[in-house]
Length: 433
Image (cartoon, rainbow, N blue to C red; front, side):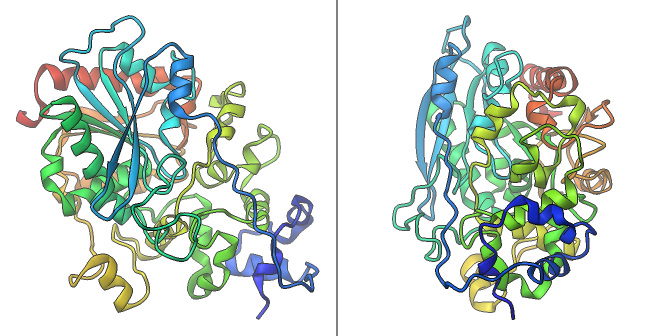
C-alpha cells in the first residue's frame, strides 16, 4: 500500500493538474493522486507548522472600546476552557441586573467569531450595546482552550485530542454555563450557538437536562444534527470508509491540521473559479462553504487570521460518520474497549431530539453546505419546543453556513430577529409559555 504520509507538502499546482476534479470518493481521488506523485526516499516528514492566532479575543474587544475579561473553568474530565466576557457596552456601563447571554462557536472556530467584525456587525458588540452581559465560550482544543490538568496538547497521541463533540456536549457546555451562572449570580441565561455550537447543545440534553432547564431561550444558528444531505466536503471524507485510519495524517493525527495535499484536493473539487482570494486556501471555508455576494472582502484577512482555530480530527470524523449512518448519534470509536471508555456500558448513544425541551429559536439558510434544508427540516420536525413565530428561514437565497457570522447583511437578515426574540423572552420567560 502506498504510504500516504509521503504526500506531505505538495504544492497547489498538483491538485490543479486534474487529479482531483471528478468528486469521486475520497479514496479514489487520493489513490489517483498518489500515482502521479513522486515518492520521496526519506522516511522523515517535516510536520506542517501550526499557525496560531496572535491577536487574542480580549485585545480585539478592547481595541474597539469595550471592556473585556477572561475567565477559566475546568471540566469534569480535566480540560481547562477559556470564556471571554464583554460585561457591558460602550455607553451603557451599568453592570447591575444585566441579562446574561452565552455564545458558543462552531466547527474550527473560537470566541473570536463574534467580535472579529466591527461593532456594527459583530454579534458580541451588538448584544453588549443592547444591554446584555455577553459571555463567549471556547470548546476544548481551540486556540484558547488548549490546556488540561494532565494531558499535553502538543502530544498528538496521548489523550488530549481523544475527543469529539460528544465530550463537548457532556462536559464543555455544562461546565461553561455553570461557571457563567456562578460568576453572574443569574438564575438563567439565553444561549446562542452556531454550527457545532448547536450540535453539542442538542446532544447535551442526553446528558444534562438540568442545564437545559436553566436556559430561557436557545438560539440555534444553522442547526446541525442530521447531516445526510450536506454538501460539505465532510461528506467526501466519509468516502474514505474503512481505510480512513491509514490516511489520518492527511487530516492530522490528533489535532486537525490537514496537509496541503488534502486542502489542494478540496480546493480543486469544491472551490470554483473567481472566488475571493484566500477562501480556497482556508480549510474552514472549504468545509463550510462561502457566499460570494455576502462575502465581506475587507473583513476576510482578519477572518483568515483567526480561523481555523483548532479542533480534534475526530470531531470532523464524527460528522463524516453521521453522513454514513444518517443518524444523530455519538461517535463510534471502532472497538468495544474504546467505546466503553468514552460512552460507558450503555455504548454509543443515539441522541433523541425529543429530549431538547429548552425553548428554541431556529435560524437557517437555503444554501448551507453543512445544514442542508432537508436535514434542518428533519431536525425541526423532531424538536418539541420551538417557540411560536421563532422559526426563521433567511430570506437571502444564497445564505450559507458562515454567513451567520460574517455576512455583509447579517445584522439585517439574522441578528435583528435574534434581538427581537431575546427581548420577547426576557419580557416573558419562554419556559412558561
